[in-house]
Image (cartoon, rainbow, N blue to C red; front, side, top):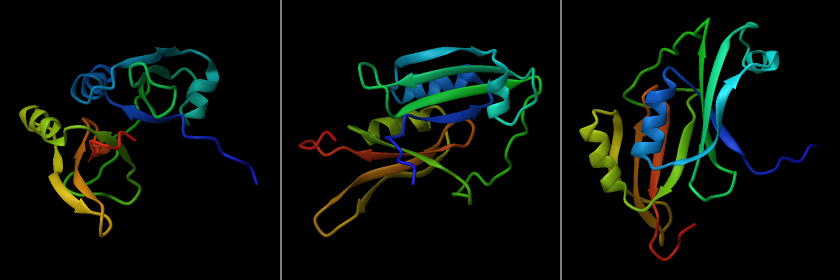
Length: 159
């Protein structure tokens, strides 16, 4: 059986590269830039199941100063633009993925989300995962409806 390495990044197909960059960089603080540009090689569109000639702009964000793992890749496709997935915005859907991050202050992020008019499925709520371990968590959606879960990082455990 093939052996997988650690996850490198999550690739998100977005409706606006600029709006999604602002969300992940400015609101969530994923401020490092790994790479950005336009995929011009024909395999770029082919790997995404799109016809040759599809314009693919991308920006790959990472934690500033962090390793090249756990990155968020934003991909905007045009000419043609893929259709938008129709799904409910008030709860999860079969097939949804959820980006999960540790965060040192979920309340602060929650205030920013509310002020920006973003969809919050669950505000900061204490989740007891075991008898001895629990922490505040919250779940919200990015501008294109991708689920994001923040877990309050324990002060004595930065991992």
